[in-house]
Length: 133
Image 1 (tube, rainbow, N blue to C red):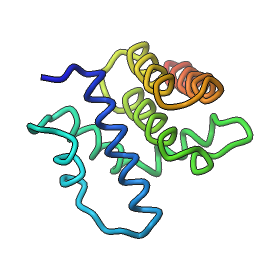
Image 2: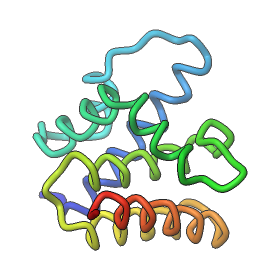
Image 3: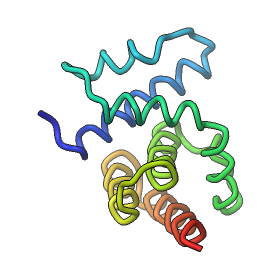
């Protein structure tokens, strides 16, 4: 059984793959992408991936509001996936905010560079503080 951190990494990989397919105009079934990454079904992964896709426009809009001199579509596909997951968890789940932000930062430390990690931390922190109001 995988822990939540490992499951978030799977979510990021599925979103990354979906972003690549979307950009290349390749059709796919999101459930098939999830099944490629998981041995057994997992509600957390399925609901997160589907929630992020369903709310993609809102998530991108929120990201763009807080990205300084950038837009989310200019980030790498991996960074887009990590940031989208972090924003989704902050806004649409009961996961504690500190966990949402920390998990996104840990993924970016593993898959991105330090400047991207700082940017993701900054964006998620601003969203957290604005949503608390």
